[in-house]
Length: 156
Image (cartoon, rainbow, N blue to C red; front, side):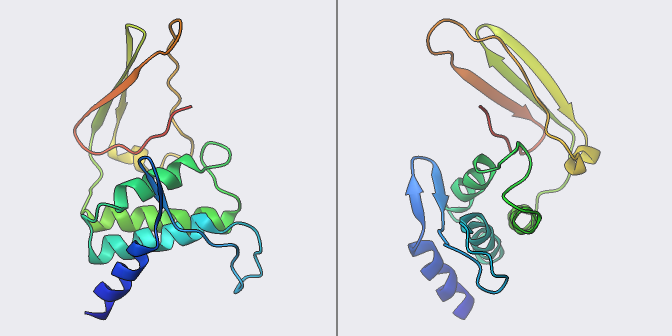
């Protein structure tokens, strides 16, 4: 019962904007980190939410925020922060009982498509997959469709 109370309190303190959710922290006093530790805080809340309420409406927007706030495509501000985020993401996957599966992603833009196939071994791939499609004049809608399981992605 206490875990549900704590998770409810954490959920009530979420910051949201559009389809993103996060929790702010101005530092980690235990390790003497005084820079922005919002990724650490968000990862910890995702891990707690996913353990107690895996289908909570804040889990997906928080995972999206974590992925969108990487620094160089696949890391965060420090190795510690990267580890904390990975714990949070793994907690979300465990809470949803996700298992490695073969997944095909189709990316479409400007009338062209590109497919990328992932195997269970790709869950530990050290570098992201880069898909490049030409943009049309003006706004170019980009769509992603998946077959076989969930996919976590960001675009720029």
